[in-house]
Amino acid sequence: MIRIKFDNKKILNIKEDITIKDLASLSEKKDLIVGGLVNNEVESLNYHFKEDCDFNFVYLNTFLGKKIYEKTLLFLLAVSSKKVFKSREVSIGYSIGGGIFFEYKDESDLSEDDILKLKEKMREFIDLNLPIVKLKTTKEEMKESINKNIFLTNKEVVDYLDDKSLLTLYELGDCYGYFYGDLLPSTGYLKVFDIIKYNHGAVLLGCDKLHPNKLHKFYDNPKLFKEYEAFDKWLKDVNVINIASLNKKIEDGECEELILASEARHEYLIAKAADKIITSKNEKRIILIAGPSSSGKTTTSKRLKTHLMARGLSPVTIGLDDYFLDREFTPRDEEGKPLYESIEAIDIPLFNEHLIRLIRGEEVSIPVFDFKSGKRRKIGRKIKVDEHNPIIIEGIHGLNERLTLDIVESKKFKIYIAPLTVMGIDQYNRITTSKIRMLRRIVRDAHFRGNSACDTISMWEDVREGEKINIVPYREEADYIINSTLIYEIPVLKKYALPLLSQIKQNNKYYYEAKHLIDFLSLFKEIQSEEFIPGVSLLKEFIGGSLYE
Image (cartoon, rainbow, N blue to C red; front, side, top):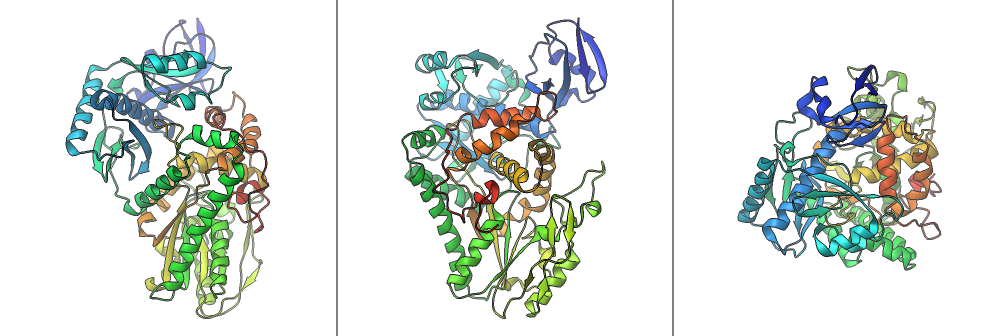
């Protein structure tokens, strides 16, 4: 018999080789079970218990559960596309409007008829409830399989996989694929999905996390899509379309070129924003810069200030973080968790008072929030802005009208900033923008806020939920979007993040996320030298050494 500590409290004695799926009846939410955490490692429903362990179910209405569902749906899309279109190569892109955008590598349009055929094939596989088999193989065996089978990856990416450990493949029918992450054990679990035509490609929609039996609603994001497409074109121009091509450039000693080109592009986007502010028909007094956590808002606001000064203005910058309430006054949810991402965590009356006084030309003493102590010091730097000069405000709530209700709309210029990456591990495995932001925040929080990687990961789900409420609804209202992705940043962040993540041991409930990030970082060649990273780079906001510190 095997002894299992279930749900952190119950002790179960079960027979060896029982699966996670066999234990589903123990849960009141058995219809939502998509996997399990065995000693804090994610395992599929077909996992066989072999030894004593700690165990928890993974449910569909959680971030991890939704991720497993989404990855399986993308695998099914890739396999179905191979069956329907034969020679056409699908390319899975990025999150847009609540779904995942995909297109075809030949850049041909996806017609409504094409989409119908694709959906029919996917529905056929789902109705058959075909097994998705998890296989372990060596790198050499994987390379051989690429030449012999219908294989969903490319040889260049396989070259950079770990030589020492066994690698995970998934099999569906006669198709094999290297899919980064954990998948469901059969196609029958994917009951909720849809594909809608979008621009020249399409958007794959899955289930709603909070209501798993319902389809996730689609929200059109034309401005965001335009920026994704612009960055995709630029990546193709500089020949960095996936991890393999990025690693190749690092191996070939092209780090300097990568860094300088990426920084120059970011500089260009900021300069373009400054030009739009200057040439606007109406005088812009309030420049609002908003974006999700760890998007580079602080550095970008200061660089924008420099560009506006170069054009003859004398702006001042204000960070909303300095207007946080002391942590003891932070609003909390029903479970008592602090809502750091809520606009109610900001001292709105004080902020508005200062803003009005600045517009009148008065001098204001800006407070300073100390993240290590969780306290706000009332006296900070004193600032004053002359008539006609702008006030730059940065923070996650920058586009929320409650912050600037007394300011005429025509006087505002709204900027949305986020790392909008379109580069993937390969054409089937995308890199999420949230993963980049989490790595940035892990490194920054350890360096500047005294938080461990575990502290940061433990807050991340709440951070993401807060962003959906406080940021996502306002993105399309922005007058301008800045993509803060730096294509070289993960190879630099790697040496900072790995030691922090390695401190999270297997008995920690966040071990699975730490291991997932460690495995992800292992795919990248490391950039050791930071010689060519300019002191004004937004990356320095996270690794330290910024000229703006």
